Image 1 (cartoon, rainbow, N blue to C red):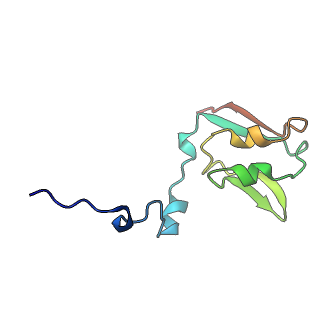
Image 2: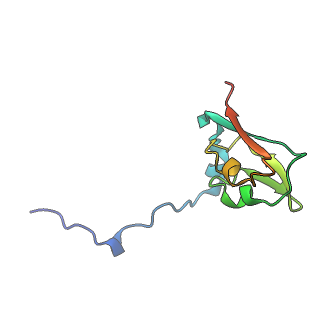
Image 3: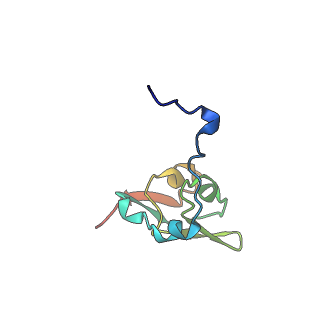
Length: 97
């Protein structure tokens, strides 16, 4: 006799992080092959990079960009892609290991 398959309502919720301290301990920046370089003098603090960063790796203080947090940045390049082209305050460069 085959075991009964669970319905979708019976499956546990996925992607729920119950222990938030584990997230802070898992520094994922070492996975990066490309690094965002932030040019503070060009930044207009539109915070598009902060909004779109899938890893919450953009540091903001008092409503102003403080740069990427390289401990958690995986180098996806989304921040550089959403930075206004006329500003070009974030540039992706090859990671130096």
